[in-house]
Image (cartoon, rainbow, N blue to C red; front, side, top):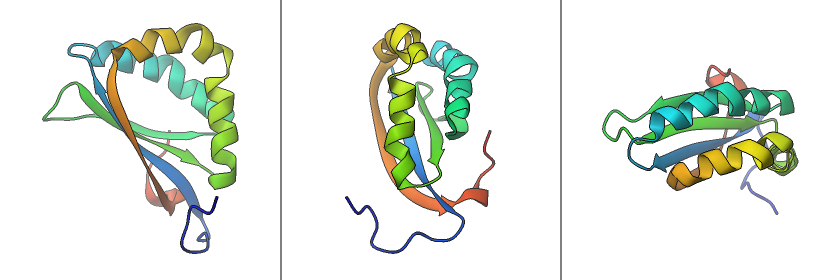
Length: 117
């Protein structure tokens, strides 16, 4: 599937802008596990993370960005995370019950356009 209306720009990457709305009172526990376990697992696979940032207006809503080198690597990298032991044996059961909803918007941006962790 062709995701773009134009050629990929030099130095650009594919980024998911992710918004999560959590059940009341779950944000601290969710983000603790996200920072301690999910972010390092993403980094091991080669995905880049910026954030997370908690909404000032809605304390149970947070945002983060997940970056991929290109569109072709996105699905295989996601599969490696979501089919991996950490997700299947621990994080899925821990984190999914806390989520009310989430939204993902795909954009293309320069890799140096944000400070990645």
